[in-house]
Image (cartoon, rainbow, N blue to C red; front, side, top):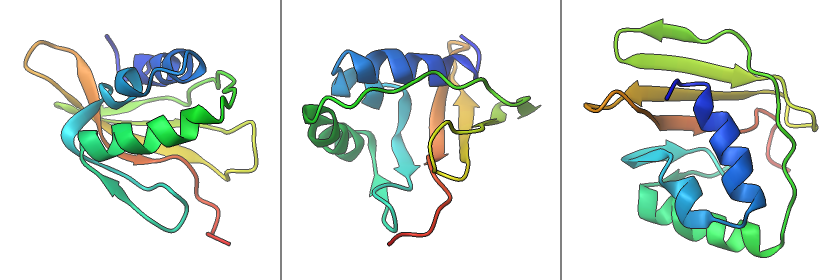
Length: 113
């Protein structure tokens, strides 16, 4: 898997209502800057958050990735959002098996209202 695969898998799993599958894209101690103005820390908390979000059956559209920056085992991924989120950016880390998981995720850069 490449760092860019995570965004595609996020969309597929979210649209399938798979909160556990979304959470599996994150390291155990990952930090998600969501909900707006807050943080969700840890895979278990991220799964709990996405269980609530996905209960509303939102639909996510794929977004074309911007060029990924890779330095060793770290990667910075980003997409220009199709909604009013301002931007999306994530830091992923290569795992021992060669796969990638998100460590930091800022799904939107708009100020909290």
